[in-house]
Image (cartoon, rainbow, N blue to C red; front, side, top):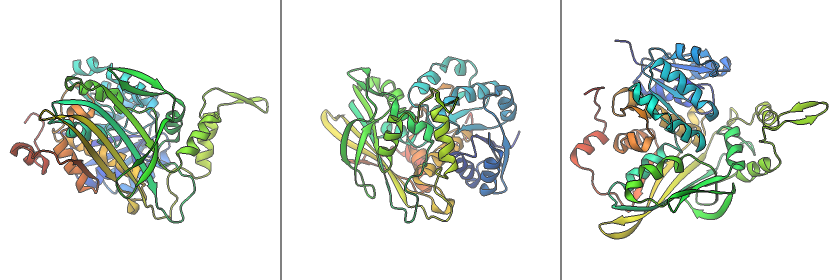
Length: 410
């Protein structure tokens, strides 16, 4: 039997490098491979992760080559830009390797779900959106609604606060391309049993998050949670599901988007066509705005607050499921980078040991057991709570939540 091997496609990126290091640090895999279009970034990620990690160059548009590199792997973690999710899924299917990614920004997620039959036929599991948000948010939402007879609404709010001393005024700790999409594409809100489009950055409200984020203005943006949670909670009558986010820098992103800097439509400049988005991404990279620069001690935090309205014991109830995401300064990682990469690594570990199993394209809230997942997050410094408190877990669930593992097929 081959030794456990995890492959991180996009392993040199902001969140991919964290997944590589977390997987190598966790000890569940004998080897971790960081693949990236930029071999220098892949090498840097592998060096930071230690002797278990190796690196290589890959272009995810070459499905045959990606499948060849995945052959024999235990699991593939897809950390590339979400527009390539379907291509990496093709390679995972060809190589027959279980798959997970960090999100598809609603529309790509829905296209991924449409491939459920292919993966079921191959008896292969693919989990779209198993990162921070989506990912932790989805699993926590299901934990908060598990004992409710009825769920009327879920409002998922995400806020961040940067307390870094001496850091840059502007820095991207998540794909700037994805951020720009969130600023320009209509938000999708599930209400009264159907999806409705709202203007991006609409529905602004001041919301008081748990410390250390505190009061923050949040807005509707396009996100993946509403793409899957309404169907997952349909039997409980869910009628409303929406996502809002906000924090330092979001107004700058909104301005960039309104200026057209995220557009894919070429503009003539000096006799040649320039794609604004490509220019913006190149400029952000040149100016060193991807991630926090070396020598700066990161101190940013992110909080996701899921407001649940439903019925428990025949009585109306309101709950808040909260996840607090710290930075990882010793790894030079912001809260977002750390949470996304670590959540994906935990998902890969749970797939490898058989805790997460099945076939088809299955969103995380339907295949990731909350107990083991939340326990693993806690061990890595990510706190999740539900208030009012959840009912006590039954004995078998407590055993699993405290680290009990089972093998594939066991």
